[in-house]
Length: 107
Image 1 (cartoon, rainbow, N blue to C red):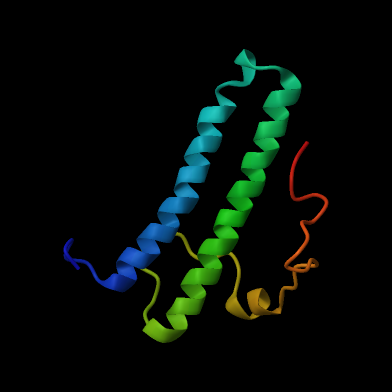
Image 2: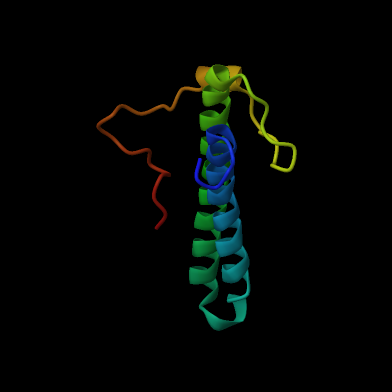
């Protein structure tokens, strides 16, 4: 690729960047604790925790899936997947395509 790295490395880097961005947002929000209403602070903090968990899940799902085609290891300097592909394939989200889970959106 133009940056001299493989497509696989760039793909891994992009998904890791997404996880790291959410963690950065969390850190910035944590510093706002004394500046916003307690309930609002905790609500947004809870949302960032959900977003962080989902970013890790999405990164792992995508990288482990594409790894089956690339047959390449995730670069050493990058965070290892928390999940494994077999577990992820077996996971069933208990909604149809036409509904949103009750706890999906925060109030």
